[in-house]
Every structure is written in C-alpha cells, then in structure tokens.
Length: 118
Image (cartoon, rainbow, N blue to C red; front, side, top):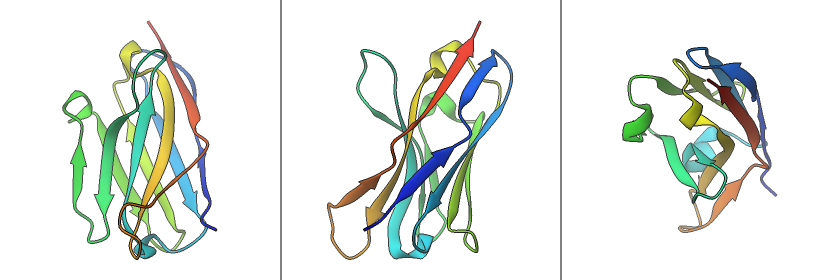
C-alpha cells in the first residue's frame, strides 16, 4: 500500500512563502510522476505542478514563476516551494503519485491546508 504524507501547510500573509513536503512510502522512481493538486472551497481539484520520473516538470499557468516542484530521491520526498503567495492560492493541497506499473491508478495524500490572508 502506497502512503503519501503531506506537511508544511499553514496560514501566511500575501507575499510570503511556504514549502510543502510529500513523503512517499516507496521510491519516487516507482511512480510515473508525482505532483501537487489543490482544491479551493467550491471549486474542482486542479493540477498545480507535476514532476515526471525523468525529472521533467510542468506547472499550472497561475503558479508559473512563483511555485517550484522538486524532489529528494534519497528521502523519497517531493517538495512544492511556493513564493509570492496570493489569497487565491488558498486551498487544500494534495500530493499525488501516478502508478508506473498500473496505468490510470493514482495515489493521494490526505492533503494539507494552505491559507493566504490579504
């Protein structure tokens, strides 16, 4: 059973930074890709950033230039560095991992709340 545990959420003011962490119970290389999604109240869950097994990254347009996804392969951890936070970044942030061996299967963390005050 794959476990993804997020940490690092909290309450910050607009313009400040936060770093989210997602610790996986197995090697990051056992997934096709890992990423961060977010869901704001009343809205659908959306992709924020993604990093593939080979290290390629992609971002939602709304966070490009402000957020950076990275990983520590020795610690089986993926990070999301969030700078210049805006109130509209307020959401529950979920870690996601796509199975390498079972296409279409995805694993999710329980989420961590990020609140950005204006």
